[in-house]
Amino acid sequence: MAYFLFFALVAVILGIIGATAGGLGYLLIIGIVVLVADVAVVAVWVSRRARRRPVR
Image 1 (cartoon, rainbow, N blue to C red):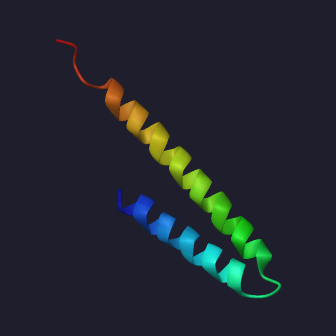
Image 2: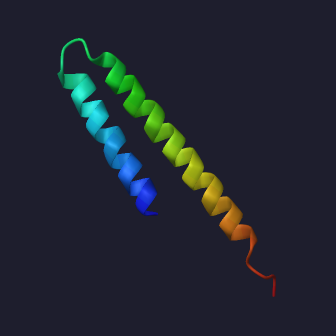
């Protein structure tokens, strides 16, 4: 879970720098891609973890 928070923070920082600095729009794109990839990895992790519960 710490990796998720770290990469989410990195994505937000890259997004802010990319949105405010002139000519660095590619950092905004990279930040969005990192955030989407991070959310996808966490979604897969949570879905795999949910399947391991024993059925009663």
